[in-house]
Image (cartoon, rainbow, N blue to C red; front, side, top):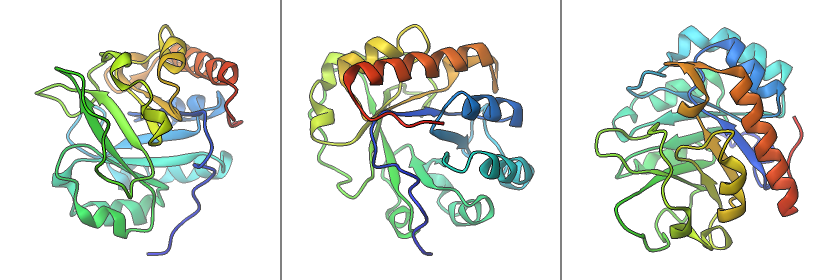
Length: 227
């Protein structure tokens, strides 16, 4: 499978909205300036089925050609990944859980493994050296993601100088600015704290989160992208 365009994923100041299940929510996020749109194909209240969303994803890809579409999987989903990538023409693979299936690096797309942080201060990671970025999320023994809780940001101070970091874990309009200043990540990701109901986004919260994140990245002097 040939490598598809990375859509400017090498720049800093990337803003991701994950757990999108409805075209109106996705359109509002992209219109507000989200760079990355996350679709969950694993067992989750926010799970989507590729064939059911194919039409509106294609429409929004045409309307917002600079946005990148991210497929979120667990290791046990390894057999479905090729068909989902092909059906939706996704731009990036996000994988939670360990061990990471080695074949995810063979599909010609950037890969973003998730490292779950909790319990104690971790050592800076040296695994998954071929990954485009590391997604840092809060550890929960019962859930692979979507906890809605932050972890201590001071635990990962300086990591973004060593690896490309996408910060997640309980981010929303109220704390994404302080999180960006504390961690100085290359991007941020939010989902559950942007919801008004399970699987549906609060569009005011989505817009506020993107605005606050963009403002904080600008203050850091990064290179934020436009919508």
